[in-house]
Image 1 (cartoon, protein in one colour):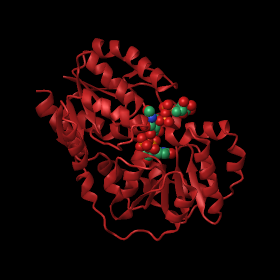
Image 2 (cartoon, rainbow, N blue to C red):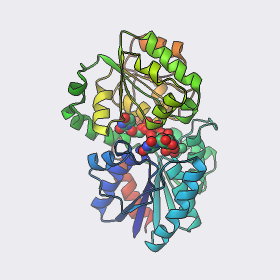
Image 3 (cartoon, protein in one colour):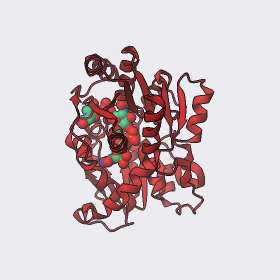
Image 4 (tube, protein in one colour):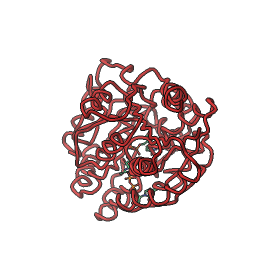
Length: 360
Ligand code: UD1
Ligand code: UDP
């Protein structure tokens, strides 16, 4: 029996880590197919090296382009690989273009499909990720849902495939990385003291496509002159700062420490030691929650609604006034439920399901 994981973007690699380890331990033959959606060292290879993942068995090398380009090109290049390698089951992760392309290709090649992180919904159809995850879920034979809310979303949609409540991989990923990150030198290198700075990331298309969002972000930086803000910049965001002619204004914000994207170990070190995190990322909202770091989410909605409980996560959109208010607010009390994301055995649960139910 052969399983192929289709991955291509940073959040896919993070989830692949524990699944690959667990499948390897079970004796199931597991192939990694990298679509090439992300390709910079710090967006791709660094995760393979930090998670001690092997070099991908296949690299499709699609590179950057529109969603149609990504999806079309991945399907075209993937088909022969799946058929020639006689794959029995394809695994896809999350909600990226690589996820949807892998799902469509598996379906068209008549290969069983499993979706890890199934059932999440932001109920915002303007997000490319929302459409990717809905389409992927409806093509899937096996849906590995991280939370009760995700299971309920799938039930409401009368999903065709089999739904399993598995917990979320981030519990074990964070559990492992938390201690490794203590050895990270990133704070020392940046001359930062623990709990003396804010961490910020922004890359979502709905934010980076609008000049208004960038102006709001800059106004936030300018309103917070006394606080250091650490900002690892996603390549999409850097490109758009340039396109909107705002890179100069960013560089004038002396409280902002701009960095290239950092690897996972350094990122978790930065997150753990931050006062608060400001982000539009999906994964970071959950990681902040698990590390008990208050999160300010520059979106109008979230698919990770569990994190909103007890105000650990506050939705502000990219609105300077709301972000500044949320930053200045005292941190929330400990009305906090870690168990919403499971007990940290998700990769084992999924592997057992694959061995006992799916592949038999
Ligand atoms: C993708 C995912 C998003 C996820 C994010 C994680 C989709 C629709 N979106 O968004 O859900 O949160 O990854 O980081 O799949 N670029 C580089 N080097 C790279 C990769 C990208 O320079 O290694 C630049 C290119 O100019 C590219 C742009 O970033 O056009 C956007 O990349 P893309 O993969 O299309 O989307 P992301 O914003 O990364
Ligand atoms: N991440 C990282 N380095 C960075 C920024 C993010 O390692 O500079 C990690 C982050 O912790 C998360 C993963 O990359 O687990 C994916 O986050 P991203 O925001 O790129 O994607 P999303 O979760 O929004 O799809």
